[in-house]
Length: 153
Ligand code: ZN
Image (cartoon, rainbow, N blue to C red; front, top):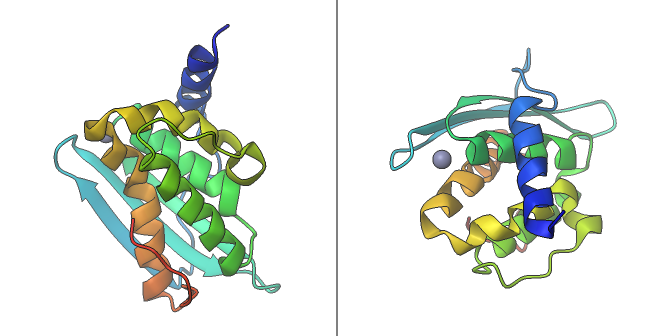
């Protein structure tokens, strides 16, 4: 099996079996983002647990890339301190701006590495970034965004 088809399988698996999908009962921040060119919609919510770990809620509709990306986002940052989540978010944004030339670090990005091929298709980059942009806005709204070293998606 080629790496490319392996990555496609990972994306399809997250699309068909989204991890942790659903909304929070008491979110601190919520952001609803749409990608009009593709018709994707995603709602991302954030809260924190007693230890300060992020709690992520999300729902959405749209293409497999946008919805799988939301599932990967959940898998990667759920339970992490916001500062650690921000490093992962920045790594994912960089990956999507790599035009497919990056060698993503699986230790940082987990299943997010599967999106490296998506970065070759400008029309799909927005799909992949949509949940991560909503996540950033939800954190800002909830007062959870680490201020230093932030970059825009
Ligand atoms: Zn899309």
